[in-house]
Length: 379
Ligand SMILES: [Fe+2]
Image (cartoon, rainbow, N blue to C red):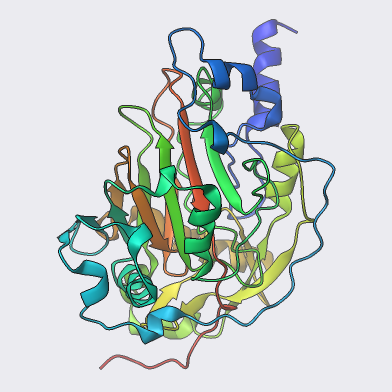
């Protein structure tokens, strides 16, 4: 066997796991402990500076196994918000990013918001779906303070497989160290890095208001795509919406756990599967949104395999092709992006190969168990 053949087959095994069915699990960003070089990150090498936020470098604690998550009562603070947003947007500069999804806000500090401002943040984000707050001090706060801010929106989710800052398993890290070759390796076997998903939809109570903030990003590249799943739903004909009403789907964490193990990573908590409505209703806005994604949605309950794959493939294509209800968010130092994970999907982009560091942290409050309200046909 030639060395190039060996490399390709290793890459295939380690960098992606394709499952049968309509979904296609891809794990492209979290390279795992085997390719992480702590010394290079702390000291820098080859012209790349040391990590700016060493307190946020990933650690993997293989000794601690976490028990299954327990159900909890979630209250959505967006329901209490003043819809004029006087506490959130006073003095702010607000610009829509597109007509259908996304906004950019300058001139306020999220870390200074009181409880009324945080209520309004939850509702504003539910309406806009994703909001980029620029020039924030969030990354410079002690990690415990950033977590305190996030805890207002729900119980912190501890990710089953990702690396976390020492002592803070509630922080999910998106980290590619300097000189990481994930991108080059990935495209040896794949034609694109698109991986639409909502985060951890396999949990019984998946996240709602979700916060992702920049520690370091490449000068160009590494943007994130977001999709408005409420418009994806409302775009469908009333007859088709009626057909989707009442359907439920299985969401599974198994492929993510297998992918983590294959890369030498950990599985903190045994993988779970949960059944959620295919269309879910937002508790604060009452909007309905598609709640399926190719990363974690495995099948439609009660359908035969071919039927399930046929319908899910249509929905995944519909989400992927809906460019008029998608937005591309550019990161910059100080950016904090907040999205509502119940009514959006997102996809990372693997579009830089120069070995620059990409380092972000996510705070992931869990929300209610997904529910669907009765079908009401639009006249
Ligand atoms: Fe994600």
